[in-house]
Structure formats: structure tokens, C-alpha cells
Image (cartoon, one colour):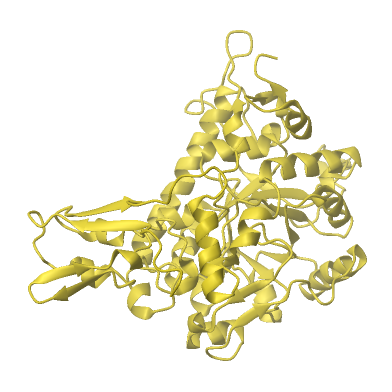
Length: 503
């Protein structure tokens, strides 16, 4: 072949002095990097994805991984990624698939925002000594409350409240479908959200019967493929989410490869065994806000107006205008998914080049809704690139009511973000349907790890709020006075509506 081989991306080596030849590397590597030939363990570094399973399981720390051991001649324009994408497509003529979130080196706005802390004249609050309200209610809020005083002196609420979702923390887990991830991964997260009093999304893969015990902590999703949707599915969730777009691949649908559609997945999704599950780019019954309003109303009618309905959109240039329409459609919350959001599989060109950062999207949508006087009509849920509790605090200060995490929850279960989710070979048992690999993920252990993460972030969030002299999420929401921009240009600070440091 004229193109020949490309330089290795990873080089695996074994310290033969330390290796006890237990073959755990062979046993654990689902990509086939290791094999035994005679008395020696051989290595094929070209198959390595840097999933780190071999490093984690080696009892003697005898395995080493080196990234880019031999690179191309450096060039400011023709990077390694640009050249390899061309080699790949010159060979195959196909779209390049990739996993996880945006991999380009865009500046992360969260890292250019700093939080405030109180001193002397505006004392801070000690979360260990004083109550901190991190409970969050998601859904429509009345613009005003009417009460009536009874003859006995009691006060009665006259205003009729619509159903809200009550989360004990503003941190929820976003939608990752059964099929894209394993049942053990979903089960682990379901147990974690039940333990921490929050919620997780089902994705568009239906709801497996083993998740029924946790249905009070589930948000069921309807996407353009309508996989797994029937009245029983709708009634089991605590809320319903209509997925219009996804941050990792705005403007296109979804694709679950047929090799991940095992018998259990096919039954849950209500699709043929082994067939590709392809979600079309648009909902074929939604071409306007009026169409969306009709679906929102239909879902509420179907569930007797007992469940809030969310609408998820990808963060793109006109997200604020679209969000204003959604707020008038009768939806109870808008989910904004930024371009750092993860996915099991997306065309690389979409993952890396389409969409806008969640920080700008949240700020602009919050400003638009406030400007039109309809901010109380919907809650805002931010997702896509939430990496730590500081990101949660900053997202809420920019205008979000709560956040979805996705990749962070997977990392808590062992994911090393190798980005090969679409290959059905995840050695950690998370993004695979191969039973021998799925069995590697113990829901008893993984659920505890995810719950620990949510609890730890919630504690840190309370500490950050206390330091800023704030004792409730409601007071932090949209409180840009607690943010300052550091090394951000004036135009971006104008979009975010924050002042620069020192101001």
C-alpha cells in the first residue's frame, strides 16, 4: 500500500525483570494487545487504545505505556491528527467515528472564570455549622404566590403549583442509553442516584426491568428514533425528556451499531436483534415550536399532567432563541448540551467542530429568558463538559438550575476516556454488551463510587457557596456577581455578563 504504516500512537513495554508472567494482561486486554508465544508474552502496540486496563490489573506494575513514541515532523498546520485523518479517509473513504467529547484544544471557559469569597464586611458561612440548602426543584415556578388566611389563623396556598422534580443535589446524571452502555453501568448509576436523592436519564434505549426499582429516580427520554417508548415507559419515569439535539453531534441523529444490539437490548429498545438502531436527525413530527408544544402537551396528557417534561437541545449559535420558544411550548425545563458533551459514537468532524461551549450557552439562554420575563417558566439544566464541583458552581452562577454529568460518572466507575466506546470492546465493562466484559463491572462497587463522587461534589459545592456567603442554590443561580473573568476577552465577558478580575 502506498500510504504504509503511520507512527505508533502508543508504545507498550514490559519490564521483564518485574513481570511474573501471570498473563493478567492477556486476560484483561479486550483489544488483543498481548498474546503468548512460547515462553514469552508478545505485544502488538498498534492495537492499544490507552484504556489502561493492563496497567490497572498488573500486580507488579511491570507494564509501561508511552504516548507518541515516534511522531511526525512537527508542523503548526499539519498536525498529527490532521494528517492521520487524511490517511484514514484516503484508505477507507468513510466518515471517521470517534467517542467521548470534543478533543480539540479549545480554551475551557470554566478555567477562565474564578469564584468569589467573602471577608470581613460580608462574612462567609460555615457549612459545617449552618444549614446549606442544596436541594433543587426543577420545573415551572409561579410568577407570584397567592395565599389565603383561614379563620383559625393558618395560611392556605391558593396558587396551584405544577409538578416539579425535587433533587437533593443539583448534580444529576445525564442520559446514556442501554445499548450504548451496559446494564451493569446503568444499574450502578441508578443505585447511586437513589442513594444520593438525585436523578439519572435512561437515554433513548428504553427502561430495562432491572431498573424498575429505581424508576422514581429516572428521567425517561424520547428521541427521534422513539426506541423503547410506550405508555408503561412514560409512566415509570419521574420526568420525561424530549431529546431534540445532542452537544457531541448537533444536527444529526444517533447510531447504535448492530453488534451492540444483543437480545436484551433488542427487547428493551423494541428493535430487531443485531440491527443497527439509527435515530433520524429530526423528529419527523416536529418542525416548529407549535409541533413541539403539541408533543409536550400530548406527553402531559398521557401521564395525567403528573410529570414535568424537559426538552434537550444542543448548544448552538441560536440556542437562546430556540430556548425562548421552548419555554413557551409548555416544557418545564430546558437541557442545554455543550460541545464538550460526550457520546458513545459520533462523526469526528461533528464532535470537534460543531456547537458552542456550555458556559456561553447557559449565560445567553438565561439572559434571553430573563429579558423576555419568562425565566420562571422553565428550569435550565447544563450539561457537556462538567468535570468538577467548581464547574457546577460556575454553571449555576451563570444561570443554570442544575447540571447533568456523564463522562465524570463513567470515570468514577473506571472509564479511562480512551474514546473507543463504539467498538463494543470496553475492557471496563461500561460501554460494551459482551457479557464477559460486562461482568467485570460490579454494580455493588461501582454504585458506591458514583455515589461517593456525587456526595463529594455536593459537599464541595456547599463549601464554595459558604465561602461566597451564599446558603442556597436558589441564591447562587444566575448570581454573576460571584464570578470574575480571568484572561477572557471583552466580547466573551459581555456574552457571559461577568466582570473582569479586579473590577
